Amino acid sequence: MHKDLPPLTALTPEQSEIQRTARAFAQSELAPYAAEWDEKSFFEPSIVRKLGELGFLGMLVPEAYDGLGLDCLTYLIAIEEIAAADASTAVLMSVHNSLPTQMILNYGTEQQKREWLRPMVRGDKLGCFALSEADAGSDAASLATQAVRDGDHWVLNGTKAWVSHGSDPNAVIVAMARTDTSDARRGRNGISAFIVTPDLAGFRVSKKENKMGLRASPTVQLSFDNMRVPADRLLGEEGQGFVYALQSLEHGRMGVAAQALGIARAAVEASVAYAAERKQFGKAINEFQAIQWKLADMATRVHTARALLHATAAMKDRGESPGAYTAMCKLVASETAMWVTTQAVQVFGGYGYVKEYPVERLFRDAKVTEIYEGTSEIQRVIIGRAVTE
Image (cartoon, rainbow, N blue to C red; front, side, top):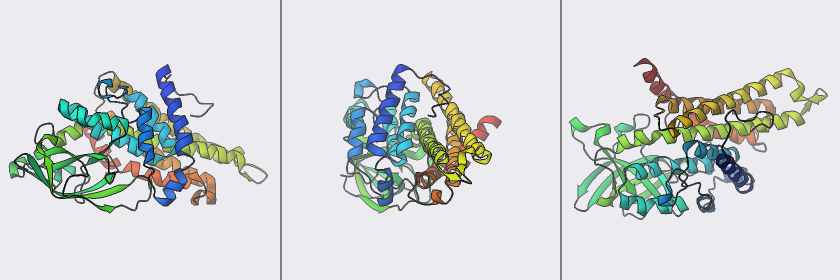
């Protein structure tokens, strides 16, 4: 937050406390190490347990399952604070709290909720989501992974791509597989969701991606080779998994939007500080109108994106369906992050292009927010349909 620009929406005492807690954790446990973790493409596993101890891995989970039972807006406020220090940790928190946790909470049996949600909330287990495949990205319903019933098990065969933290030994992965391959049922209605863990025979991490950004967040390819999954790990009704995922995407999109906001805010703050210190032609560069206007545009876009996100979260917290507004949040915040970090590199000049300064990493981290959880093009399709149909 900029000291001279308070938030447009007043926070409740509880939200302010969560924000302070998240910021203190981010500044002490993440910010000092983020550049090193990025450089080495290293994930610090102790972070998961620390997030769990703070309650940040169960923010949307009811207290009955050891969660905090908080509202969506408070959750997003915390994600922005984490992302401003380290976007890699923010994506862990966002993925964990959204699709895997929400799908188990909303569609799991009582036994599944008690077995999986509590250790996920504590940080003993880390939630992951496996939908995409090499040939099934934006067209995720075209996935090829298959599941066949065999007695008390389902046998899964296929390969999943872009699974964040899928290599974690304590991962709880909600994986999608086609259970009905008949021509009449091909598409979203023939896909089921399964709770998969790395201890299952036939589970293999086949590749770790060498990424441009979010390098401290491991992204892997998973292979299922005749992997036998107990029948009681089918999540919800057979054939409805893809529908469940679509219904749970609201939290995912808003989580990415909050992550993008954190990245953009960090870029603005770094640029404001640098412009006050950097001198050219005998004065600080923030005295030049060209730089002032650039900083003004950067700050305006961040506050605009935040206002849209917070208003959408408030709508969801009121029990209303935000619909296409979540796509707007994701679109606006991610494109804001990319634009703002590009301007930040320009403010820093040559120093913005080297790893010694933070905006180079922020620039790389920002790009993927325009891609995952639905590309900007897909978000525009969703919004376009909402305003024309």
